[in-house]
Amino acid sequence: MTDVTLKINGETRSAAVPPETTLLKMLRESFSLTGAKLGCDVGDCGACTVIVDGLPVNSCLMLAGQADGREVLTIEGLATPDHLHPIQKTFEDCASLQCGFCGPGVIMSSKALLDANPNPSVAEIRDALAGNLCRCTGYTKMIEAVQQAAQVMRSAKSKRAA
Image 1 (cartoon, rainbow, N blue to C red):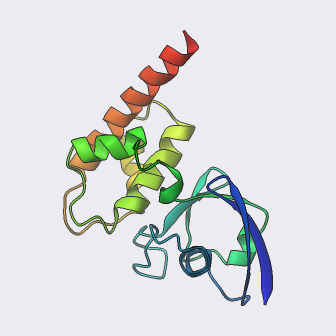
Image 2: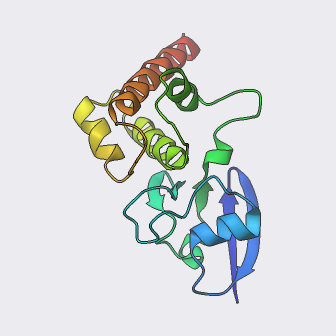
């Protein structure tokens, strides 16, 4: 067994897992954080995307031990039951998701993009979402939601600065 300690959604948590355990499996089975999904299990679909030290990561490809000592943000850490994150809210307002299976990964990829680039172009949004596959809806509404979220977040930031 390998002892792994992470800062998950702002809280330090530890688990002992077999060395071959992926970050995704540890999040889901050791910590009951089931927002990230197992889709393809080879890093192609993005359903398992979480943010590790500020970067989007396919958690099905990262071993839990590789995440030891790192900061992990999952979809569960974005919002409270009473207050959605602006990205979640714009995805809802734009009806950008249907079944929701890909949603957490798409939203986490969007968050990583907007954290790094608060005013992305459409091409940059497409590039950031390229690792996320969706079978239910087109990507146009997702791109619109990311654009709206960027506006909302920039506006909120400028109000805080004033």
